Image (cartoon, rainbow, N blue to C red):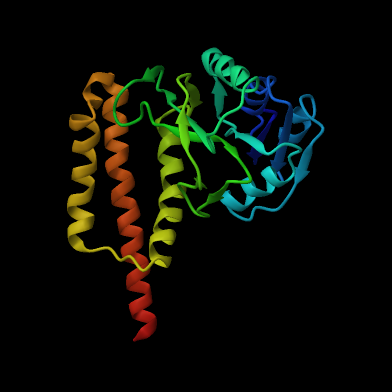
Length: 253
């Protein structure tokens, strides 16, 4: 099994060197950049010469394009703010020496947030499907929460994918605004609408699910922050969805 690693970027000079360094085990590295204005591409050239500059078409389309440029059918996709643990690298190297009847592999992702590794709060193990046979799977979803759909067996690896997410609470808050806009747009296109009840009660449910039922309280202050932001995400998403629906009604009138 030969594996091509793919990564998509835009203004990731802070993360890209460490991300690409953790892909040194792969048979090739393919990077697709969405016209970065920083040193992302310059830094990436130290690790690979297979770099493509392309306008942003959406998450899934960009990741599928990256996979199409690969010399091998087995694709490992990494986000710029992720790294591979030593245990995960060892498992992947073992896979390269054997045949498998799986169409894809998923692995647990562990997130570093506000100075600690998060072990609860709904953030761990947070399994992500990142290794797949491109002849049997493709990325779907162009707004948020894109994922690989496969037509075969999915197996699990044990090594952690390491996620170095937002640096602080301010960055977390800024990112929520962007992601909730995309999520609201996706729901609106699918015909979903927000009600008073969803705006009022869904955020409360999100907080309780993260902090109580998913043991966020065991993650200390970071766990409290994760739970609060989970509630705020749902509130903003539903409020923006309500705004879109209200706009549509006004246009119809």
